[in-house]
Length: 393
Image (cartoon, rainbow, N blue to C red; front, side):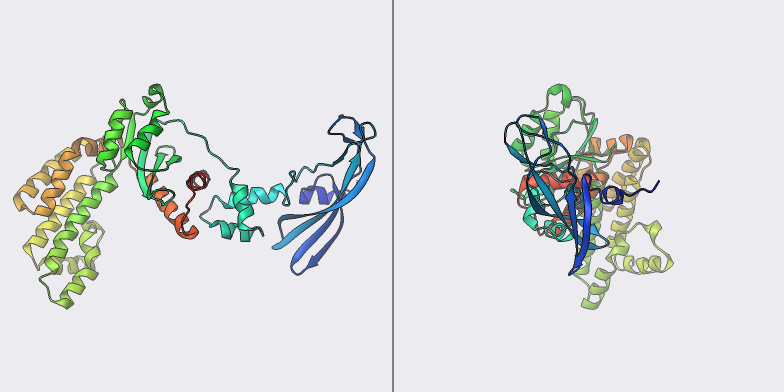
């Protein structure tokens, strides 16, 4: 038996028949006609086949073979024999009052899962930016449930306020929500929408060394244990080493100062990651100053502490770091150790729990790319939905 329903199955245009296809200026014009069938009246719900008139509707469709395609559909307007009302037939692939197929809408929403600007997405789908925006504005995400492990961080968004907050589930790699501001009263009000029973389900809360976040967590999540993210702690070690290097460079000649500055990455890298040539260069740099050499030893001891495999090993290496900080008496690393002691309970908890803010920081990087491609997003609700839609991919 010969199968002849290719148009309906390949193009997904159910209930239509292909009349002809024309290509004009790199645009495929597809002419279709609906099938004559009994339709149910929208007023009295009785079937009718009586045709009142015809109308040709032009609709944007997805590309075919790399070319833009436009559907020209000859639609029937039916007349009901019982009540006398007229109505147009419905098409499965086209919603009411729309001039683009549901496939176009689905593709636009899929394109919004990437870090494209709205203007770029509209151009890819042969739409105007306004239409692309209206399609995306149909997307909304409800308030999420709180997970066992919750991560909170801030990022510069400029959507309404300068900073926004991001909530993630670092275990299941899921962005939960975006808060419009980082003010304490706003964050407390947000978490106040959850019952105490729901908030008690949060057992760990991952954050950076923010006094503001710590106060909020202690008041809103009585059962949660605060874990300080290792990445934010490691930055302080790098900054301490950089302060010593910059202070020492001031005493050098201009050519030596430039050489030190160009080679700064060797001093802040892990010694085990350097090759033989880089180690020789490091030896020359450290020979300039005892203070520089002591700072490098402290930096390596600090990194070794941060690389501990378990809690007991971390405590032992922290005691060793305390000893050499006291002996060398470098102000930059003394301040670093004092910071560690203030947050010691939360920092050490990272070694026993194994939780970090790595996933959250990765999300922040994607948000930066989105902002750069879009030249900023000012509407917060749209910005929030865009981030949640993009991270849900």
